[in-house]
Image (tube, rainbow, N blue to C red; front, top):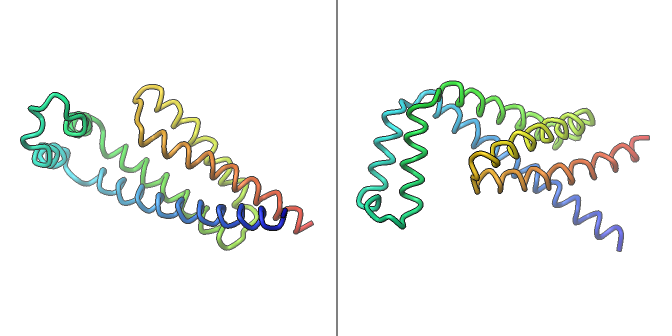
Length: 158
């Protein structure tokens, strides 16, 4: 029974690492785009995609899209873009190192994810973003799975 549970946890660990890789690639692409796409383009695109729906007071998605586009156009999108690109790059490199079974990557990824979760919880407090809540839950599960696998790898290597 224990072997079956460990095999399931290991498969979930590998899946979480692949999800982390895909998410990291998305953060890198989004960060690059955020840094180099003009803010006026973002606002015009949001207005185009929400055309005709912003008059409806109940259309949460259209209003949220416009709100985010306005905040993007007034924020320092270059700094935000560099932040997300670097955040994605660090997580990508650590996830690849885990797939290559590099022992040093386990505690380093745990540390990075811990700090990301703390900052995400802080961001959730102010933004109430459902997307950030989802990412935070995935990161917390990944912390558990990486920690569990790290304990096993350390025990095997001793």
